[in-house]
Image (cartoon, rainbow over all chains, first blue to last red; front, side, top):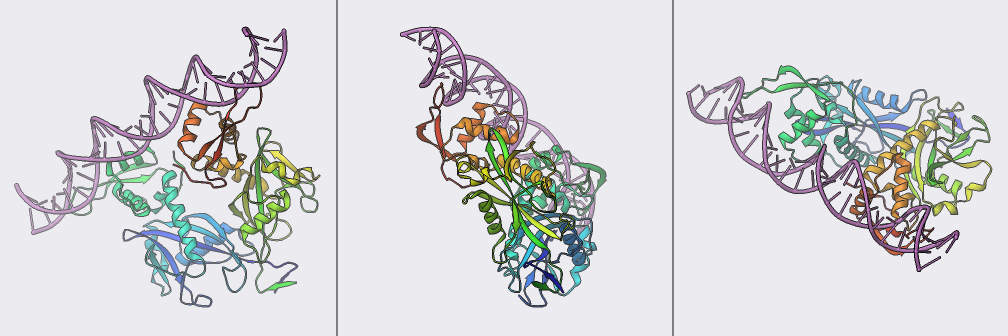
Length: 221
Length: 221
DNA sequence: ACATGTTAGTGTAGACTATACACCATGTCA
DNA sequence: TGACATGGTGTATAGTCTACACTAACATGT
């Protein structure tokens, strides 16, 4: 039992976990077992421990659901309307995380019953105000593509330019000219050729590239 | 006495209140009366009430310190390191606010003993992690000048282009070419001539402009 | 009334950036 | 060896950004 002179809200972290699967932007949702919103899908999240920072709390939630660590994670926004949880006052510090397509294969969560990856138009009526959180995360993601190397976080350690372009197209939901994209991304000088080729399928093999500073998200322009 | 099954952190809002005074970017600080950090300057802030949203809490803090309402206020970031307050776990949702130079004259706070406006290089050793909060607020402010009409929030209802330019120069800390600035800002089509002139001092009077949508911050480009 | 001082207000040329657009290259497989 | 599929490349144009200097209009003092 913990007592205070003044009322204290509960504080949680919720994480919007994005990844690219099947040529779609998807996010990880969890089916709620208990009330409220029992049976509804919700963002993974939970209470912040007394001795951990908010970042650490979000990272822990991420690890608990995916088994992954070392992924990109950034604070998004804090949601604290008094009525957002019917039980008690709960303030949630929302984060978003990006999982690359080689991390996703390591991701343990997928086989669990109550966990799933959903495309942005494959879910409806999330629990709490989670739809608002997801919408804001998607906006932030799209905005950051324009002025950072955020999209590289979705790529495996070696990737083709076509694969990278398709990540941009999926998130921004618009087609990009191949030649202009390549000029642009190479001019950034944030990726380099590995010297290897992909050689998949009945066609010309593609050069493989890697990030010069793997894992780093850099602001550009 | 309020009791919970699990430990709950205290949640506060702190507000970085910016204004332009004496051709400098200044912010409002409050001298702490009690421990910890007694006598140190700190951001205005306080506990979130159980029945108010985070935005409302921040707006209330702002009003309590300045007497002002209807000013621009936006959530900045949430700071929650376990050791940031020596008394108990305190998570603060930081906001920043912009006060225009006609609002500032209405601002009651200035005559109080323990309240003051400080230029960005006029203070040192703020209480808690408030220097970090201020630094992030300043970064956000400067970044937003590039892609929004945020700077207009510092302007009185009617203003000259020279005055507007000087706000940009003060915040960005760099000189801007007069002709290029005017071309740029007029091309935005977010301000219009009032038809009036300023006529101050021994020189040619300047045209006065106003925002087309007063109070609105718009994303540009 | 005229000279002085101070800020307001304006345009153009060149560099650079963004965009639109189509064909050949290189591999697999039948 | 031909069909198919994706990889890879350049150029011309429009648009944007940058640098740069002089005249206009007022107040003031002589």
